[in-house]
Figure (cartoon, rainbow, N blue to C red):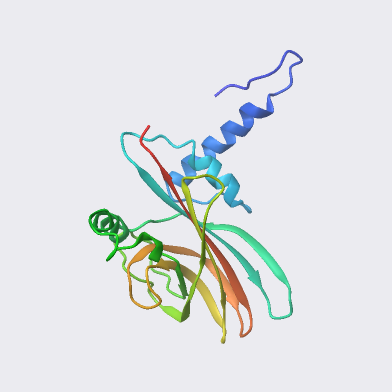
Length: 204
């Protein structure tokens, strides 16, 4: 892809911004995170560049902020871009038939764990869940096609947190998305603020 320049020979910023988003979108489509810290806004923009072929697509994005007991804070940015589950897909079909027994608003419970098994869309729970799930706040994201839930989980012990899930209940329930990421080491009194965003794009 060649460079686009203005009449003075300078590279057009808009072109390179679109190119960078497209390149990031290609990585996200493969479930890969780029090197360095990436914000959810950058990821959402990149998802918008992905090609859609006669299908509604849903993609989950997880961001995290670690706060230590002493107040030290680390914004980790986006830590995972995989995978919405087949169980959630089937739940949507059931919700279209009966939203009373299958309310979509139920998917607001955040859990985390220490499992290291690779992500698969067939999974129905975390591998090694620790602690209690936390009910997150729900909101529309930066655009109308983004669902966002935010929850802060505080720990009562020391763990290397490597997985997160968004569920339809405070225990058991249906798993919408399991995310696997590099270990976030926590001690008693530390907390992680998880922001989960699911982007749904209509067919092209």
